Amino acid sequence: MDEINFPIGTLILPEPARTEAWRCWRGELDLDRLSYECLQTLPALAPRLTQWLEADVYAERIHGIVKMAWSRNQVRLHKAAEVHKTLLEESVRPVAITGPLAWCLLTREEGSIRTIPDLTILIPRQHVFKAVAALAGNGWDLKSPRPDRDTLDWSSNLGLTKDDATLHLHWRLVPASARNATKFERVFMERLRPVEWNGHEFQVLSREAELLHRLTDRSPWDPVPWQVDVLMMSFADVNWSRLTKLAARFAAFFQPMDVLGRLMDLRRDWDLTIPELASLAGRLRANSTEPADERPVFAKLRTWGRSVWRA
Image (tube, rainbow, N blue to C red):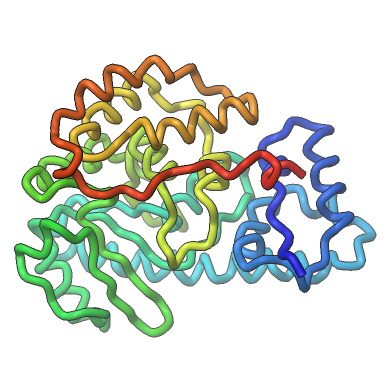
């Protein structure tokens, strides 16, 4: 049997179309056919489910999925707070939480749950070895052999484990050529902003860097599609001029129009409050001065067709 995909309209459509999208999807839903991707994405609808599941025979099971996601998130956030404290005590600064770990705290709709499969933290590369030593002293084990400094040029993160948690300790979030890697990594550390959870203050990426990160492909360990992450965020405070300038700075390393093209596709399909960005193509390509064969291979980016995402 085919798996049932997540109805993206339930995240973004205005009412009453949003509720109708849920009803159409729910009418064909068999929980035993729910894909793992959909299972991990369903908690994003948490604020609406009480209303939508009235008198639903599956209500208890669906609410159970949401409660489990919330509980696991709390455990991972506590782990992240411990890691954050350990790194700061060792003078590793700045420390930014990124990926699902950050996005769970930055949802557009209050109560919406973005599941956290693993922890992702970004630090400056000059602190990587000090950070690994500090984390090892706190019970975290490297999943692979300790790298040398040359390895940091062509890799982006180290994996560590503790109990049932996995931490991806990043010094780079997207591809970059080795000769410009250090300069490129600093871009993501600019304009960090605070976000609070349970009395603990983390640092997260700027809204513009965060949006570009959400537009990239998910890691194999994260089943939630990039479309969901983009549509779960608020565009209200995004500085679009700054976003385009940031994308232009990336142009020497990979094809930013591939990523911004995803944003334009979403704008077209869902009538989002995003300005027209197509005029940037020429300027961004002009900034891509590094020969294509010297730039890192970046997976070809495609949006999912509307037929998959429409309810």
